[in-house]
Image (cartoon, rainbow, N blue to C red; front, side):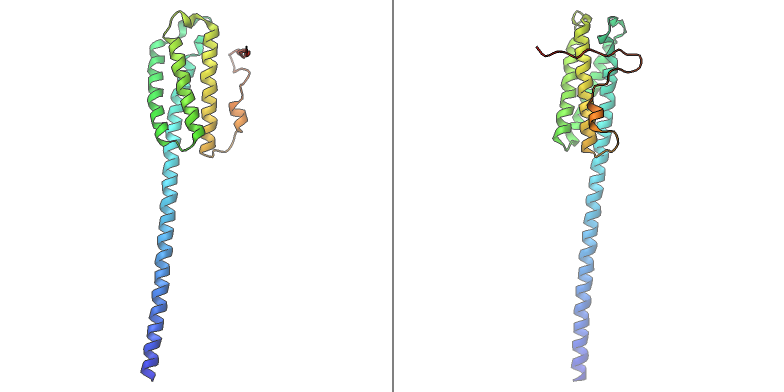
Length: 186
């Protein structure tokens, strides 16, 4: 009887030990899966942040390059550089479209690309680019699209700080620059 009790105790102890180790294995696997998921999320955010920052920087360079369109003296305009920057911005948008995870950011990036493409039509037409009104409208269209992209990317990546309304608002003027009149609806 003592041997049976010892054997039953051993079996019961072994079963409990097996169940506990099985539970520990499941817990460890769950923790590894959670850690892997967090790492994938972090890498995805890093890729998106890098793609968005590269695209935004190029698009902002383009926007800075078209500023002379809104002033009477267009001789400051470097058409070759603008063509190059527009092409590089378009190429950078491809990576944005690959990694984007939010419809708002996708739409905002698309709007920037379309605004730059529309502005390029003006840049490539020497007669049209002498029209300061067209230059101001193109400049504002690119600037507005950039502000929307910046706000959408910040929302997607949950960047804290400046409120969205402040980013998308049209500032009256920057130092050394006059405010552009807003177009009236017909």
